[in-house]
Image (tube, rainbow, N blue to C red; front, top):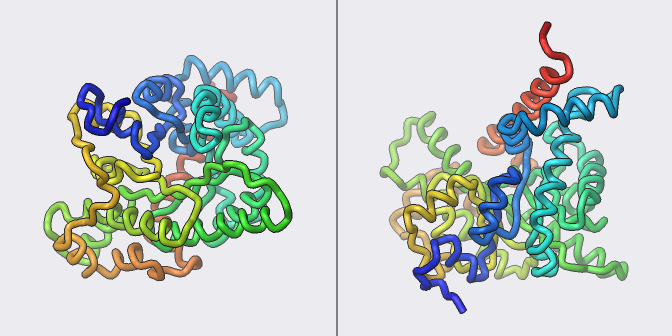
Length: 360
């Protein structure tokens, strides 16, 4: 049997023989097939990813969008664009079916994100989550880790939907999601509903927390030791992971939004998911990043954590009670990322418009 120290394998392949699962942060079928060869057992889609994939493969998607417009003559650009997103997700999900079967549903999941334009409407988020969950047996639905979104997660999970939290950057967000999913499981058990392997995951987009703190310190005129802010997301993830274990939460943590190999190398060995973009997987393997040991349990170096803890905005992200759920959507990383998701929706609408109503 291969072990973590088997250096005949690349770093990602070596990590894949631990409890750590590799997912591909894209639903692009070509990238996903290659990522599966590295050991990937999951993938994700969101408005940014969907727009990128559809734009990258006009030979596939331009004629398909035209066909969809003919099949559904009353649909607007948004409906046509989301139909393409669903088809893309179903195709990616089919590539993951072997991993889904082999893991009993714990892995082999394709994440599809709810429409970010619904982010304020809990009822609409639940309805769309249920709809998306029926696209394939191995679909897992991403909802925002905000007050309305977490309420939707609990209700959707109670209804049998597998959940992945997105728009999530901090320890208090992760803990609130973990608790909500536990309540959903307990509600199902109390009513005699089956609790199969849902494969629930709770994401921390660590690199986006780093991005926000870099912007915040610049705005505040605060100088930090070079490199320290690159550890902020790592510190938040490690703390949330340890608290999930302490509290007995059954959902796994997921590391996303890569800005350095730390979002991979510092977490290897944990019962968790790492979800790097495919280009990061290639770079990690090409550079032979060391993955020996059980790094998830290795604390962030004291001098780094001490300097980070001197930043009030980091403490909001790191302390278990650093923010209330009503504050989650107003956190800087949340606002910036939500705007990016909304912008990608608008770009997808524009792309569909140009296909269906080309300029004269």
